[in-house]
Image 1: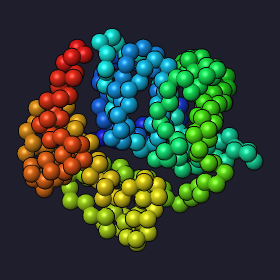
Image 2: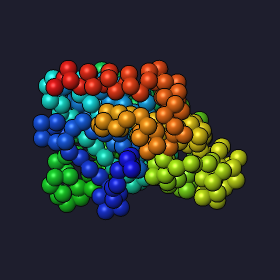
Image 3: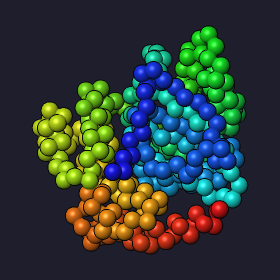
Image 4: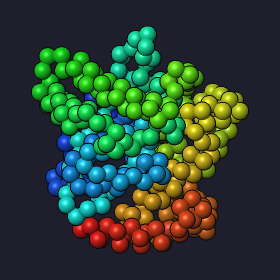
Length: 296
């Protein structure tokens, strides 16, 4: 069964920083999600990045941020190889707070799906902030692991996040009046992994609420607060993400794909897919096969 969750050990490795080059690394990057935050800084080539069903085109100098639990994938839109810097980290591990700055993890959790806090940030919004130098410094600290490297990494990452928050504030994102979500929902975070693993089965929201030891109404309310959509819609989103993955990277027919991804039958899959994407699964497979062939 196709599983979108990417394993990581954020307890022993709360930070990663590296250069990704499609000439030397496996590519494209299939749809996946994880519990840590990820930031990509584009160096060379043009990338097509899909994050939670939104598509973004990244050119050199552009940056994109993947919130924890965001489903994302990366493809190429150019004939030349892609090169980009990657930062992965557990935002809950950043303990820099002050009277003027609440816990960063709480602020970024509140920013999810806020139109004033876009995950894609073009190069021009950073002005004099030297992104390339910051990412290079992070990679150097991770590579050398010199004395105090973790403290310096926290400072570098926090500096980047503060710069992003300042850009968002200029867009209208109001931190001071944010009703920050209370951290009483660990079970709601871990339930996403259960949904991912069992999305091919018959999942009922009532049963998921029971697993979180919540009433149906409280579970539904808290789920929508955290993820900006109903649990039912999220289950459908995960199933469709797996459908797209199978359409792009396998030759399985629609009957098999519908069975593997939790749809009642092939017709149900086609109706749902077209409603959400505007094209049929067959049209989606043909279009993306042609696009990828053009860039080989």
